[in-house]
Image (cartoon, rainbow, N blue to C red):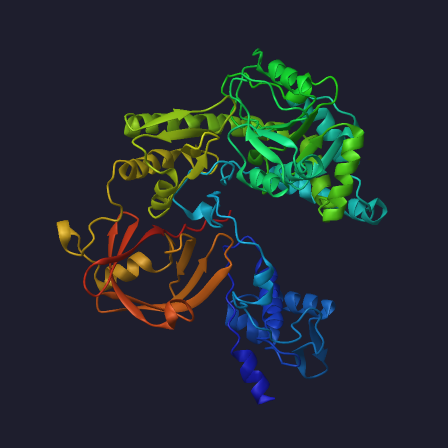
Length: 599
């Protein structure tokens, strides 16, 4: 009994009063996590509600409610006059210990094709922690319609909705969402469609992939309009399609039975002859046209052209669109609009993929659109994005007017920045990440490169400073300051300054193999590291200050060896220097946010 008690007393739990979850929910989450990780083992006794409440500094009622819920769910068990224990048989706990991180030479890896290295941009998982995230389509907190989505999700998850879910099983889309899209969303793009002409998908890219699988076969000519979706082009080539690029001025006839994929960024005016000429070329070649539409983000007074589907009279256009990211919390669903027979084939393919959007998500979107939140969010976001895009244009003009050329299109929330003097956008983007500036390198159909700089994820107040940092790189200035400590007046931080500068901060940098890495330097001496675009490589360790050096030691990274460094600061740019005084790394410091007061 004493051994059980000591083991339970060693359980380290910390609750955060400023977190969105209540203390009771936090405690339940941490206890369940400890059980599943076998920190708490079956049959192990837990502290009494009074003891745990004192240890955590919370009310006894908070602990009692958490215990009661876990008892009811079977995670814990009560023994008369003895106390509360971890249940002997908890569903979902690990059956045994497997080998983590299989060898690269395993039979599984030997069966995989070579990974594609086509330069496709991958946004870091913690993009929002970067000081200057110019990544189009990522939405910051100022734009996120939190209250509106809370209402829509609450309605979609209400009791009378949930009890009907079993009766609505199958692969049919939510009828309420389809009607809202037909009545309020598609007409914004000049599209009228019947209920049997609409299919909801997980995302617009998912819809595009479905269309590609249905239409692209070996030998089928496919013309892509720039800018090219790299993942789509790769998938089409893997299917054996004869992939080419759409002539920008439509100066020559199309191949017979061609499939044309527009990018949705052609930017022609509403009264332009381009849509009709494009459709005429498709008809003359007995072809089909796939329109990958991108919702307008900025309402800047320019007329955004209606969708090409609105000009279609004989069923040659397949519309691939989606709801606007600026009005969503997370990846918004996509939508396919085509002839009923095509939609049924697409529905069957979606069913085979196991990718039908969840019922509650579809119903939540139906409420969100039906209550007017979607259109209101577009207006509000459009106003803010127009201000931000103007700020970006002015900053680029101020700092880089003689170095770059910019272009955009009606309704866009981004600028395409073309570099001069033969600079490589991919290399520049990599170096920019090291100083906290996220930009997306893109390739045009003619092989040239550019930077896509969006404003959906960055506040207006940070745009000028972010462009200033980028301009220094474009002009050839080396980031991170001098390469040796003591040069040009650079002074390393003393012990007290080190603790003040690092404790509670988050550091962002790029690994030598080009992937993003985030290090949390916690005030209690712990280190938490996350590397990779999806946070797939994680480690923990500890740090300390000894003399005027910052020491860190990981459990696995860097061979688990302790290493000490001198550190210098230039604003939030961090230079890390080795024993010989030369710079060994640069990082960007993200200062801890002050907790908001609760009213």
